[in-house]
Length: 104
Image 1 (tube, rainbow, N blue to C red):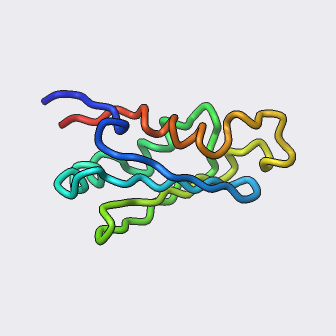
Image 2: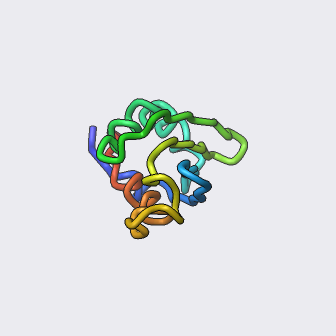
Image 3: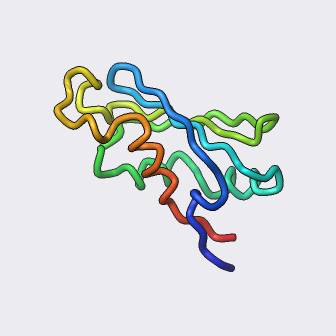
């Protein structure tokens, strides 16, 4: 088995609202979707974002799109407008997810 980052297998989109962020992970190739579902679990995502101390990570599967959506609660330092850390919102956090490694 070889190790690859999610960046090589998928792209991400994100949105934030209040103190929650949602990150969609979309496989580039349909045949990689099952691998992503098996390895990119809510527990692994929570561990990957441990430095942000997520309160809850929920995953929603979208098999027809080859995608999944993660909602991470309590990771935005109170929300975009309350935070002094604007660099770690939105795209910054989606790029961080894409650094997660999986076995292929």
